Amino acid sequence: MKSMKFEEVFSSKPRMKILKIISRLGTLNVSDIARRIKLNYSTTNQHLKVLESEKILQQRVYGRIRMYRFKDASPRAIAVQNLLDVWEQTSVQ
Image (cartoon, rainbow, N blue to C red; front, side, top):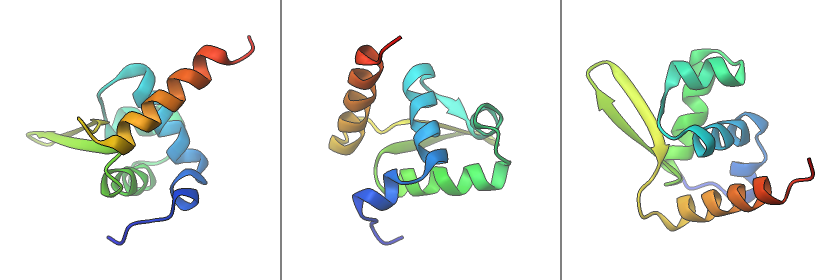
């Protein structure tokens, strides 16, 4: 998959929801992510593939279960996590 531009990756509301959920909860499987963002499995899976191809998320397979989390030691993943942390810490309640 060809690398996407920054604005293409982050212009998707479902992808942003995925990143927020994984940032808050850590490692989740595809079904849990789909249920939490209220999308079907295949659409969620497509968004996860984009985030994985951009080296923001990584997948671990345990039998038939695929778990996603932020990619270890990826500068992009670290930057996204830091942005989400700062955004959440400074958001007006």
